[in-house]
Amino acid sequence: QVQLVESGGGLVQAGGSLRLSCVVSRSIFDFDAMRWYRQAPGEQRLFVAQITTAGTTTYVDSLKDRFIISRDTTKNTLYLQMNNLKPEDTGTYYCSTHRVAGLPDWGQGTRVTVSS
Image 1 (spheres, rainbow, N blue to C red):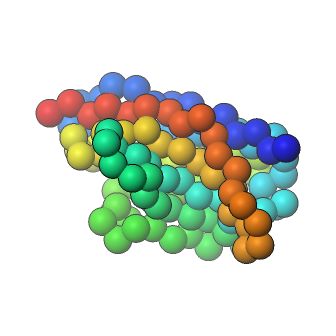
Image 2: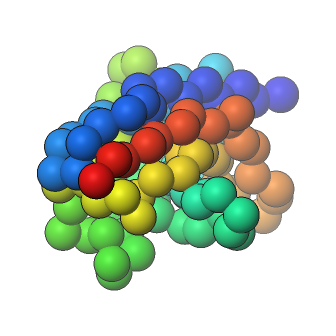
Image 3: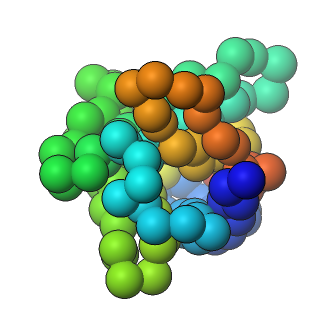
């Protein structure tokens, strides 16, 4: 069983930055990709960004100019750098594994609150 532990969330003012981390209990290369999702209060969980085994990154269009996904394969850690944060970025952020054939694994999430 894979364990994912997110951290780095918190309260930040609009315009600020946060870097989220996700430590994975297995090699990131065991999966086809790693992803970040977020879930605003009362809403569905939505895709934010992905990084494949090859290092190719993909973002939801609305966030690609402010968020950066990266990884440290030596530490089995996934990151999400979030810049110029806005109140609408408030929510719980989750990392997940992605397999072409198979179900994802999820972390417990880390909460981000952006005040105006």
